[in-house]
Image 1 (cartoon, helix red, strand yellow):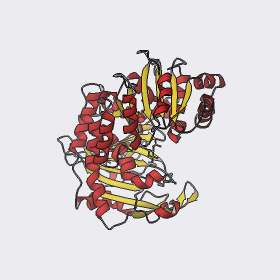
Image 2: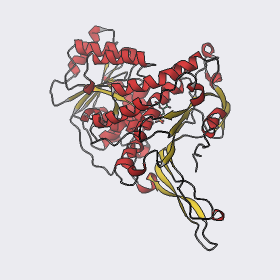
Image 3: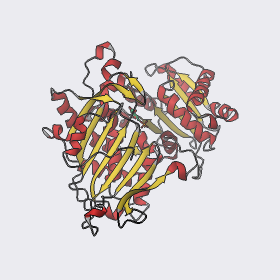
Length: 493
Ligand code: BG6
């Protein structure tokens, strides 16, 4: 990495749900990379807690396997892996079994210089009990941190319950709610692009921008994840990832990069979103569910075919498109089109800022009408930024205009490995930096906007519109934007 590696204070990271998928796929590989880069060393400990009976050595084996499976070979180094896994220890503990907690007590170091963090990689109904045991047992310290993941509720009411249970024990400045999109390098780059350059901010408003598109498409299916059928794309992706992206695009410049300064601005955006309620829901939202089809050259089953017998007939949406509006001075009249779905044509996350047409063209029509500029921020894959500009088509033949992208490809410009979102987020917890984590009021404002959409869908007799796997979603999504005389940006442009 080209950025400086600043070692963090030694820590005790207690991971509840230590044998789960998230720990293996994301947390261990992320910590490994930070260890390998020298950001922490053997003075830190990762203490796994889960119900499964494992020894310390078994848990180290699990960590070794996770590195073997989820870290690319170029970065695997036997010596480093052995030093890394020596940081790991394990406690078999059922949250409900009070005796098991004594072992945790013995594992935690009392030195105030050792940062204490609890990562709750468990179902949200366990957040409350775990927090209250931590409190009861005195593991709570004013400087301890607690990290929680989505789903943080299924609606506003349940989200309030979960947050109340956490805040009965921990103060808001101790709570780190993860939205892993905020940890992505390219998402942070959005801040650099907007607030590190003079170019964009003066034209970042309704006078110059026609509309904004935010697409997060996946080619994978929902698979057999039981959670997904309960959740659906609106709760799984829109309520958190897409709305956070919208906030970063639409917010006012914060006075500093202080966590609360930034989160205050995001909150204002969420509170300015025009509510989509009642009849508006069918005009401004589209939901879909995939049928079988072909993705990346292979045939795939429909969502229904993937479901277990008792879930067949499910009306869970695997695709959502929404026309959102931010009702404030800067954005009045500028639609934000959001879309996300599973089993779409390809995996692409991008933000398109479509500028307005020039007010007057000096070129005669035969020369090719100037097309409005657009800025395409590609979050993944092929991370980069393209600014589409009009130039003169080179060569003889008079003045003909042509659109070309000014192309900043991160892969071509930077040779270093791009860190995964969790690498940044896990260590921000240790650094005590909450900038890239969601504050409670943000989360609740997002649910407040989402709930009426969900309620209208639930009340409607319409099923989600079917779409063929490997396409860009249901025809309703195309109609949503084309009704306004606009089109979705082709992700391959
Ligand atoms: C998760 C969702 O939050 O984000 C998944 O629960 C989704 O359904 C994933 O696949 C997408 O993340 P990424 O980083 O692969 O874009």
